[in-house]
Length: 181
Image (cartoon, rainbow, N blue to C red; front, side, top):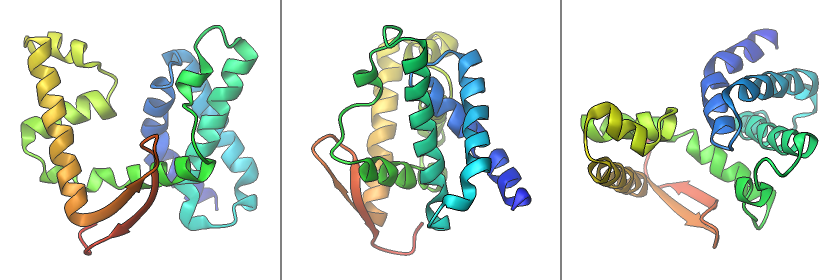
């Protein structure tokens, strides 16, 4: 079990850190939260009923830990409703997280320029404005590239899977069309 947890730490640490930072947490606090998440995983892994959903379970723990962080440190820091938009059910969040873990499969099929902007903005720590400054390009150019890359990624996913969303954009169900992922 310890080897499996170590593998999960190696595999998910950076993704969890980005996830927590995108919830408005500072880099310093994000590190602490991610460590707390893995302590909770370590302490409670025996309570997990379905091992196939371990990644979704871990991200649920991260989401709840961020919420706890804001409750402890004052909700005035950031609007919790903004951090966690109202959702029809927690299962929808888990499904979205579960599906999101598949996105890495599609990235190599994107043109290099599209892949690079998505990785740097969506999976990295840069905002579109910061990337524009870094590349010496107008913000509108980078924004257009990100939008085109997202659209192409969406097309690739829809070629492979049927995805159903709720009214908030959360994934409520997906099914593979082919064995592409």
